[in-house]
Each structure stands twice: as C-alpha cells, then as structure tokens.
Length: 461
Image (cartoon, rainbow, N blue to C red; front, side, top):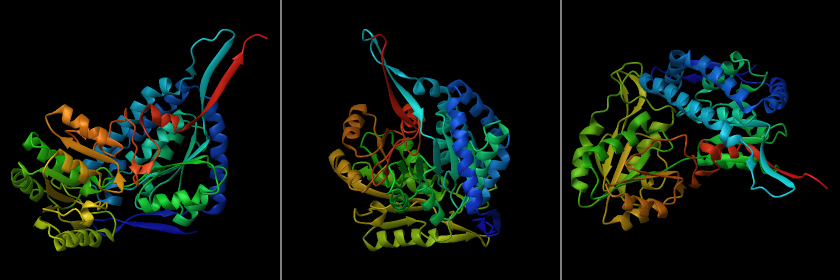
C-alpha cells in the first residue's frame, strides 16, 4: 500500500495522508460506476434532483469540517473556506432548479403523421479532475450536473486537496445513491492519464493548468470521447476614463489578490486609461498594502499562504522579470514567513508593466497586481487580446455601449462590465484559445454531459 502526504502551507506540518487507490480497487470502482450509471439513467429527473438535494444537505451539515479541511490543505483563510462551501451550495441548487427544463426533450414543430423530438441521454461514467485552488467549486461544476443528467462520477481530486473528493462521495452515499454513483479515488498523474484511456470512462472534465490540459488531451488520443478542459487565465481588466474610480479600484484589487491570487479568473493585468492612471495607482496602493498575512484560522488574516511549495520562487521570478523590463515595484514582491511560519508571498503591486513582461503574457496565479497605462479603448482592446489565454476580461465604465462594443471584440469566454473574478451558474463557464474548451454550468453545461438521440416516429403507415 502506498500513501500520499499533503503538508499544511502555514504550519508545515502534515495536513493529511491518503491511501493510493490500487489497481484492483480502481477496477472495482469503475465497474460499480458503470452499474450505477445504468441505475441513475433509469431514474426520472425529479428523482435525481431529490437525490442531489439529500446529498447537499449531508454536505452542508459538515460545513465547518469541510472548510477546515480546505484551509489546512491549501491555506485559504477559514472565513473564505466557509464562503466557498456557501458558493458551492448556491451553484448546486441552481443546477438542480434548472435541470428539469434543461434535460427535457426538445419537441420539434408538428408535422402531420410524425412525432419528432430530440432526447438527451446520459453519457455513462464521467471522470472529474478538479483543481485545488477552489476545491469545492471546481468539483461541483461537474459532479452535480453529471448526476442530474443521469451519469455516475469518479472524482480524482488534486494531490493538494484530496480530502475534498471524499466529502462529495460520502454525501452521496449517505443520501442513498446507487453504489458507485459518486466515488472518490486517489492515483498519481500516470495512473490518471491511463484512466482517461479506460473504456469504462465516457467523458473527462479536467480543471487545471494548460500543461495539464495537454497531458489529458494526449491521454485521450486513441479514443473518441469528449474531453472538457477548463484551463488557466491571464485575465485583463480595463479601467476606462469614465469609470467609478473608487469602486473600480476596490473591486480590481480584490479580484487580483483574493485567495492569494490563486484563481483562474483572477485579475492578472490591469490597463488604465492614461487620464486616470495616476489617481488609480494612488488609490490602489493603500488597499494592496492593507492585506494581513498570518494564520489562516485567524479572523484577522486576509491573505493566506500560497498552496504549492515551489510557487513563491516562481512568483518572485515574475516580479524580477517585470522590473528588469522596466516595471516599477510599488510594494511587496517577496516570499516571506509570518512569525517563522508559512510560505507567504506579499501582496504585490507593480506599475508601468511593459507588454512583454511575463506578468502580461502568462498566468502568475499569485497575489500580484500588474498595472499599465493605455491611450484609448482601442489600445486597451489590443493589449487585452494580446495573450494566448482567454478565460475572462472585465471592462470598467459607466457606458454600457462601450462595454458592448468591447465585449464583441474581446476574445474571452466571459466578459464582465463592472465586476470580475465571479461566476454566475446561469451562464456558461468556458474559455477560448489556451484557456480550454467545452462548457460547464448553465443549460449548456447539461448538453456537454448528455448525447442527443433523434426520435423520428412515423405514426401510421
């Protein structure tokens, strides 16, 4: 038997140790999932909704334990971990409420002597590979819509947050789901890639890095299954000359640094119209300096440690690259400890960041606010699109017409006006370019978890 140990990013102590799922157990789990998929497919949508509602009640009853697990595995401040449980429940309930309409047959206009409709059938077994940065939110996007659509789910969570997959699996067991309907496993990257090729898997949804997405796609090369890829972002914000400056600065700073910047849709680069540039910078600096690093279980802590051991050095390299190329470091920029504990990275702000800096081209995934001036909307648009990543972008303006014009030209899966780093489960979550492919959430998310079947009946010969 082999095990995997996760450290606590704040204390350095062991956060948890999990057993690796061996080949024999994995095979049994996949067989159970196949049988469970058949059982779930025979249930009505109403019955699946009731099952999911019972499972959510079981999970919400353990909110404090689930939140504590998140905090000790990846360092998120405990108040934010509790907030993630609440956010997960909101998405869960929205998908339940929309399931019946979204999964209903599409009935075509009447044609004499015929019945024509499009049925939406479940795929079978979905392999869900969530990320560690929002371990509940990235998991619920797949697990609950998949079950509502009649699929079984095998969850292989990130090595940083393996306990979170167990919470979902246990909730469905306690809710009376068919054996294997939602199962949690833990295997290494090599086993995961082999699992993608297993014929008992019918769909894969991966949330993670661009590199990881390439690996998963390559693992599926000999199969015709669909692979959904929710990958990284280098998400831009544009503060137009007419924006509400105080609220814009407040929201953009939070969008960049919340969760230590460890979000695929965090604001990573900020373009500010030159007419308000100096005022924007002056307003942002005290907000960035105000973040409090410390014990993530302490209510006063607003900036937790970064989750991965190698990440502080990577973030330091991003800052060094930017300053070498001409950016000004206003505050932060260093890995630090607090009272001898934690792998923290200071809340960081840089100005006049050039377009060729890595911060403006690659995902940093850290608490860094990189700001640059632009001359016009057109200049902002050109710079915002100048990236291989296209997850979200935000336009901050009082002019809806400006936001509409820019939204049509922005090459991103989501375009916001006057908000950022947010997700509405009624809207599809998707990326373009290297930010991935496929859709989760919204009615379109159910389409990705079902296959259409044409029902073409001639009623009389």
